[in-house]
Image 1 (cartoon, rainbow, N blue to C red):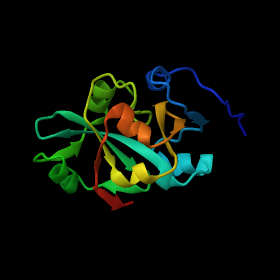
Image 2 (cartoon, rainbow, N blue to C red):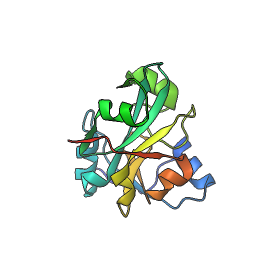
Image 3 (cartoon, rainbow, N blue to C red):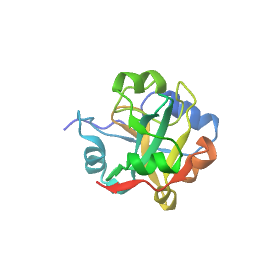
Image 4 (cartoon, rainbow, N blue to C red):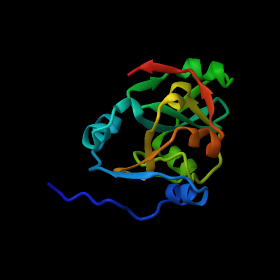
Length: 164
């Protein structure tokens, strides 16, 4: 079994959090291709519902946006489009998501993104005591209080979750 490191080098996400004075914990795990939040939550021993995935999407005008969703839920694109409001929302292709965010897919954080984008958060995430969210690198999550999402990112709450 490989030895876990307790700290990784700075990422744009951790730099943004430190600049804002946000207290966070660091959680390193062995990244597994297509393992997603099920794999990270299993390795870290945390509830997948409290692991938040960062999804880069786009509207009908190809304008990017970020959706933050529980790890064990999926996004209802139709419901999201209705709430934000726009005609249509769809996931960005991986290369487009990387161009907008500056992060490799699987390591996308909503903090320290390359291009400013509106952020939408599933409302029930804000009721959790603590969440784990990507820290800007594959195999690396940061633990924060959910209020950071609204305070630092001006994330707008939405209700668009489907059961995983």
